[in-house]
Length: 328
View (spheres, rainbow, N blue to C red):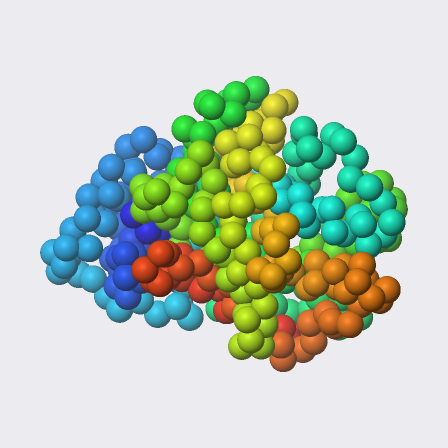
């Protein structure tokens, strides 16, 4: 099934079930008013939501409405926790190689992860408001999963059973603020504004054979200002699968239902497949020519992030955002 949230309904939106074609939806107030409410009681809510989804896809829902993407909030307008990994080591390797540094051996055995912003997410069509272009505005196309309640110290095998929803994220980064923050030793804060999730999140069964070993095996496509930027395979070069990432996050603490775990920027060893962020393209330019050529994003620039199935149909809907100056 595919789930989303309308902006109407307060800070946590209004939960809706969306059809497979991403054209119609129904509200489900008798099951759960919000997606977080459904996740809090997932064992009971999921079968009922799935029944609604099946009826909707068969055209048996009398109260379905046409889906308007501009009316959508993030599927989870806010979450208790968002932890983001860096599971695609080609991305890590290039960034460090451009700085003349090697990847520590531990990066191949233990996931790199940080605590991201979860107090609020942008809607899939909301603009990205930034105070200054000097901050180095960048997009990052990633895959995310959402869990139910995860006990502390679970194994990766156990963690796999706690992954309930999958989606995409534009993990916005302000690159020129990152070096100063990392130099302080406490990690990202100002350099990571709010991110945007895909219009819908889907259950693993919607992905069929494209969900293998808790890895999503399809290209993740991005377009910058309407031009193809990259379409690396999300199923290739992922050093740690999502079960391993969830287990890593839960090593010393339980994870609450609704926790979001990100893959990190999707990247492949094959450079012909493009990149999923501007920073990586700039790193490749530094490696090959000594200096970056591609600028960071400017006000008015647009980014589109989407994943299509093998038949060319959109799975999660597209994230489409424009960069705009922040006006108080």
